[in-house]
Image (cartoon, rainbow, N blue to C red; front, side, top):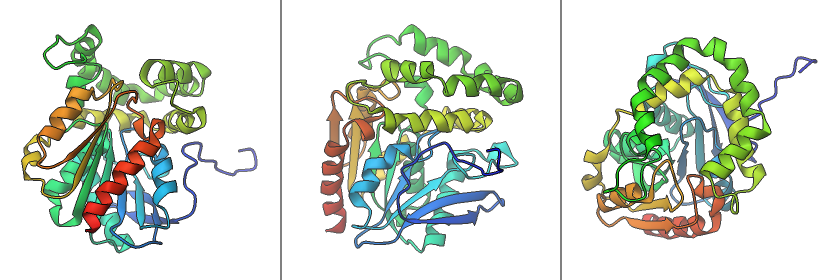
Length: 314
C-alpha cells in the first residue's frame, strides 16, 4: 500500500488461533496457524494445490474450541516463503514440513484432513509417519496422478473426453513454460485472476453455482493472483507422477472418503475407487457438490466428520 503496509489478499478465514512462524529443514520460512483449545484428537488441515486455507472455513468454525486444530500454509503458498530450490516442491517434502509443524505445536498425533492435493499429502503422511495419523478424512482428491483423471468421463469405462486428452498431451510443456517464463506471464495472470471473468468461469464451469457463495470462493482466486505460479507448476509436475495407491490396503485407522457428483477434477468414480481400496472406510458421495464440496455442502461434511471423530476418540 502507499504507506508501506503489506496486505495479504488471500483467505480471510483465520479467526482466532495463534500464528506461528517456523523454519523448514532447508531454511524455508513457513507460516502456520494453531488453535490449542479443546479436547480430543487434533485436526490437521491439508490444502489442495494453490490453496491457502479457504476450503476449511466451515470446518474451522465448527470444530475450533472443541478440539485443537492446525493449518500450515505450504511452502510457496499464502505467506509461507517460496523455497530457493524449486525442486523441493514435492509431496514428500510437504509431509516433512507438516511433521516439523506438528513438532513445533507440540502435537503428537492427529486426524489428517486432506482436500484435493491434500489427499495425496495425507496418504503420503500415512506412508511415512503412520504413528502420527489417528484418522483420515480424504475429500475430493485422487490417490495418484490427478492429471490422468482431470476432466475425465463420468464413468471409468468411457473414453476420456477431448479436454482430458489435450491436457495430458500438453501438460509437460505447459508446466515447464510457466516455470521458465513466469516473470513475463505474471502481469497477465494477475489481471485475469482479479477479474470478474475468472470468477464467472470458475463458478459456472467447475463449481455448482447454486451452492457456492461468492465470499467463500473469491479468496481462492485472490490467492492465485498473488501466488508465484512456478510453485503451482512444479508441484503439479510432482503430483502428476505421485501415487499412494499402494498405501490404501494398509490403512487401519478410521477413514472418511468424500466425493462430489459434479467434481471435474476428481470424478466420483475416482473417489469410489479410492474408497474401495481402504478397508472399512466410510464413503460420503455428495451428488450435487463439485470439487469445492467443503464450502458447498459444509453441514453434510461436518456431520460425517463428527461420526469419524467419534470413532477416532472411541
